[in-house]
Length: 190
Image: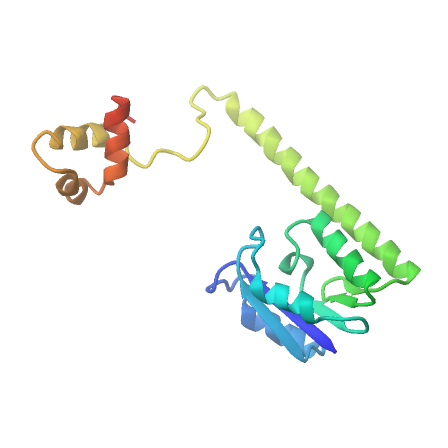
């Protein structure tokens, strides 16, 4: 039997042809007769439909996915999962790569592909670290998310707390109660 698996990070995802509908269409065109779908981020380990698929698929079957990242959280996990399926006698057809089976040519292609994918990921990490090192040279550099409110906005909101409740100040300024509590507790203006 030919199984398909499609995954999106969110129900509304529809970019780069990664929507569930686009994936399902591509999987059907590739011959998948039963398709499992999940709407979870790839970093989540709980993917109920994928787990059902893994419990059902057996030797002689084929698993079709549009891209490796649709069923693997990382290249190393993808490599392990593909190898595990192949060892069980299951063919893996990744539409943008090809059919993965136990032939020597497929092993070579799989190893080269995974090596390049890991290299690409490592290069992205390296470039990110280099960019961060350059940014840190700027004396105004601050790590993390930029502050949502300016110092004057927080000061004003804290002054309003003298004569208003947290809820009233939140309605007047749009600054959440938790932000105000943190600012007050630290006795420091953000």
